[in-house]
Length: 344
Image (cartoon, rainbow, N blue to C red; front, side, top):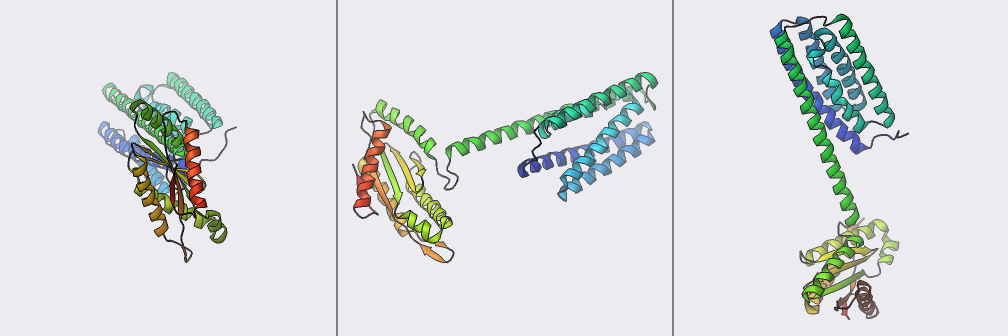
């Protein structure tokens, strides 16, 4: 029934939102205090001073990371205040707009049961206020001109608050979409592109190569004896080595190249517009960088080498054919003693 607790990230977002609304609410109640003081409504001056202190307390609780208590106190202020303001000044004061503002807020942060409960409570409260207003009228009416001014002020607060909430929601959607795109295209460990992204880049580069009859080279890289490193020093050491090798590879390539972690300890590099000789020069820089690399892990100096297989795409080649040739060249490098570059 959608009763999962909020994640740490969601709690952080909610805390920021509640804190921001509490700040705006405190400033609004300063205006209320001045307004009711000007019209001579002494009781409402004191009520709004009390509300001002409540919102200050809400922000203090958020600072102390007491999110649940802060939200509870927030609601305990808003609901009675809206009811009191409506009963005291009448329906035309516009205090009920504040309740409508919280419908999307609850819908975005609460469970389905909470949304249904709040919607029901809201309808009952609005109905009760409507009935009481029709029966008794405002308990402490103010002049019509002031009432109109208050109504428009409350309406403006509602519109602005709803706009802020909608903007926040859209921003969070955009952030979530960006995270999903990143997860779909980036290797979480090394920060390089992943195999899925590489295959998409290959399709685009191969189509361009066929159209423009240009050059396109593929380089496959495999770290030598990586399993032995993992078995001897642990997977954390292996992960450190993968990250550092990825950094060296990234520094050796051009902006137009596509470097990806192919899987495990294997990497792939797509070099559009590069001849076989130019691609070999890049591979040698990468090989020398790994050979010179020293990774310190738990007091141990770890070293590694890498083997490289290079090939150039021919016009009739499919991706599988090019990868197969690059793998053959990589196998030749392994047989030749590792830590070298071979091409097919």
